[in-house]
Image: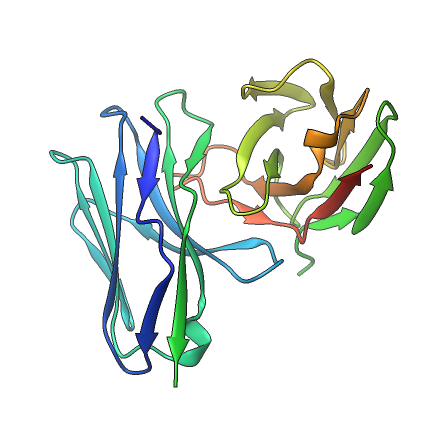
Length: 110
Length: 114
């Protein structure tokens, strides 16, 4: 089993729709959680950190369920510019290492 | 505010050769992590440098080595290149023990081994 698993994708979604990404992690001692966005052939960029209480940034909402070892990202009113690969990232119990999912590719269609 | 910079942007090497990749962290950051990203995969952690020492290492062979300089810049060296080393090599910088441990990435070096 991979340490961080994501929906394989790709997700093809019409503009304006709501899309949800799911991620599970295997290490219950994991400390920090993030969603990164990566455009084609570019570097990953931090989208948002994920807090236990859940957090929202504009159209983006992240949730963490420690009991189920599950992280989610919700994008509302999707834009063409949201097309990218979304990577779920977990900070392991070793304190410094970030463990990355393989990413889910999102394609927003007009 | 200068972000993370990496050089070179692209590199083509032959099997068995050695390569050195360079990274300058974001201004004010003191920690550098290196990742290897194969096509269609998430980044894989190679190692992290802090205070000029390798603080943690991922599951990579000794052919992968690195260094951090007093100005916090860093190098990644790969010896005896294999075809499988072809990938995007990403450098990320962060600030010591910031609570959320956010990392900022450079544009990467795309290495092709033929």
